[in-house]
Length: 480
Image (cartoon, rainbow, N blue to C red; front, top):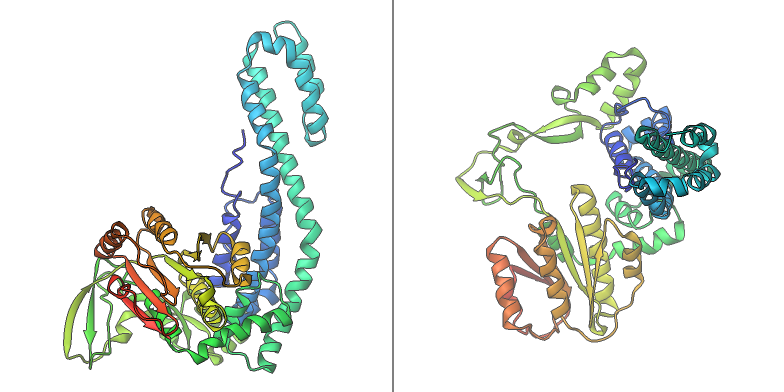
């Protein structure tokens, strides 16, 4: 029978297809040529459009617009499918129970069960007449193979209905999505150029919009992002929370020249990643293919002229004459836990500053594919898994600061997250004025233990409040 919690249920199969295309500009190989997955078919249809491929390859703004637009489309389809899947749990259980029916129950209920199945699934290929003849004949109910085949055909009809429902969903909104995508790819870059909007600021504000362009809403978010211009400390915080360790092992080599240069050790491979530029010697193989194809040679020239050839980035490029050589432990790139004070003392400008920082960290998490968990607290603590619950995140941005401050529940929530494997290597950031009563001895000891095991605790202190003893519990507190 079908497993309703299969790889398609949460949409990750489709997101992975989208990721692969945006990262390389090349259509991923399909696992099979099955055409009953209508959402997958639509994705390949859109990605196969030369205009879309050109936009994704030539402009990182257009690539992000395309990605978020298609992500929103996937979410609509998957959300509908998840709702139907939840409703169908009873049907799935009914199939499982029917497999275990006793001989007596089969005799008493087989005809009624067949009628129920036929009423719902006959138009999806379930053959009631065949099984009525088989099970109604002498000895038919005693034949376990016939009974199992009936349940299997019931399950297959159930799958076909789900596929048909998905096809209907895709057909219902695909035309609107295609028009919106084309309009966004043309309108948004023009708007950014006309209004001289910096790319980094666009990415942060756009990241809050769920793939749907709205000029007024974008400008509201953009005003929040621009707060970062007035407070360079927010860049410092983002850099602290954005550590990336060497993937080669538990240690990396550092080369310092005047205290400023570092070289990650490349014992396994000199390749660090992929970058954009004009380095023909290091360009990726598919760029060579563009160069060697008469029909695509103009695309290659355009990508070269606009510094957008994809090429390997090498660790040895960073090598400089050095005075000191030292080795430091490397920590793996980990998730982020951000605790935001929403008490009344944070209302006004402090709240605006924190919202701006959150938008910067959201972009960082998306780019580095890191998990980001938000804990909003005042008297109570409200945890939000940012990547899985963007609706709650938007509610957080609309929420106004009010009430008293109690960090006890927030700290317990943080410790609970750090105890889980998914967040075991997290950086923790508190954004608050630190007008917070000190926690108890047990929580202080546990916080110190987490720091000893490698967890970093940072603070963004906003305002002029006198330190209440928190500073010694943190690795660093940046003040505004």
